[in-house]
Length: 240
Ligand code: C5P
Image 1 (cartoon, helix red, strand yellow):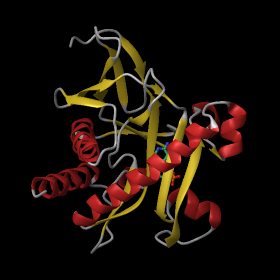
Image 2 (image 1 turned 90 degrees about the horizontal axis):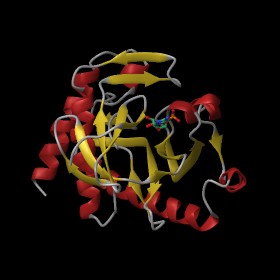
Image 3 (image 1 turned 90 degrees about the vertical axis):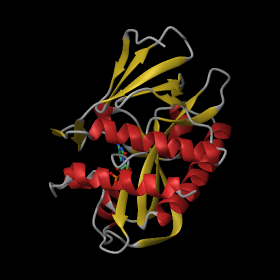
Image 4 (image 1 turned 120 degrees about the horizontal axis):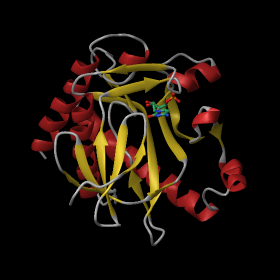
């Protein structure tokens, strides 16, 4: 596949056309943003680590029967993926309270939830990706009731496979965000990425944060934390 015109540039990735209308190329950047791009930074090797981590996790999920957009990892920073229409909703799963939910509800970060929580945020930069509910989704017309049911089921299935995986890595999967997309026939599949940029991952023994909160909260050792996740992931997946 040849890299064609750039279709889209996001905060952490660029998307390029290829000669195949059903395939696009994703390029992971080293740029980091937080708090709706009010905080900006760049970390050496972040792009290649997120590409490597997402590739390993998506292949693991494919092995469990979850369809993803991943076709193949092309190079350090590039992946070939199936072209999808991204549904402009962030599906956020929370196993423990942290971040915006801990703040909103006034509960201590790290409180385990008795139920798996799924939040939906509307992907709209100008609005700062507001938290919405099913009614708002139907009002906006971005997904149907049937699609929402599929999206919840897929999201919960992914959560249980990820919990199983991170458990073996001695990591607590606190929360994470996924994005889903539609293939041309309407099938909803996992798209975007799953990496320390999109998850909260705490070491089970030390509770050390091994994710993007190190950047958001200026805790240092950002690249080292992403490397740690990559190394543990490789070790666990090699032993499967
Ligand atoms: O910010 P908040 O606490 O709601 O984030 C919940 C989870 O979703 C975190 O793991 C965070 O990294 C992820 N997230 C994301 N992209 C966003 C918002 C949240 O990956 N735009």
